[in-house]
Length: 142
Image 1 (tube, rainbow, N blue to C red):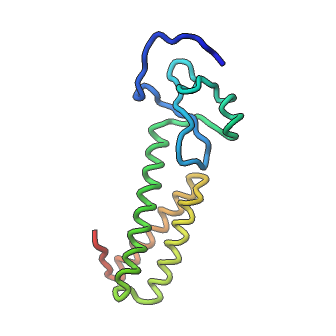
Image 2 (spheres, rainbow, N blue to C red):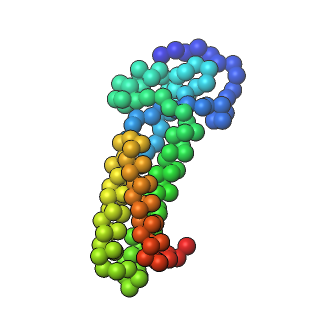
Image 3 (tube, rainbow, N blue to C red):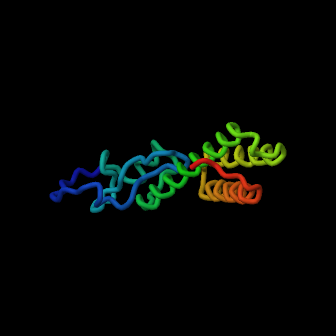
């Protein structure tokens, strides 16, 4: 590990990149903007990779936006599922069964997220659910 002294103090806003391990819901550490090492443990990507196989450096803002989108999708899946169970009289039986199956798939994609294609599949599933709701004249409580 490098133990060079850095004279300038940095804030979290200065850190534009992060070390992550694909499939994890949190970052490993932020990348120091001047050294390229981890902020907390002062390690390189190779050193971090020993503890976190497959670790990589990503744009921190983009990673946070993707995480937020995934969380919003997950909440929307739960809201639709709750509405289906709470107001079954609004749903034709077969439509409700089909949508519950689609929602189950979307939630599976989100819970087992390994790459962006899983999130894209969940988003596509939710678009289908919204179109069916619109076609059937179903209005959910906001």
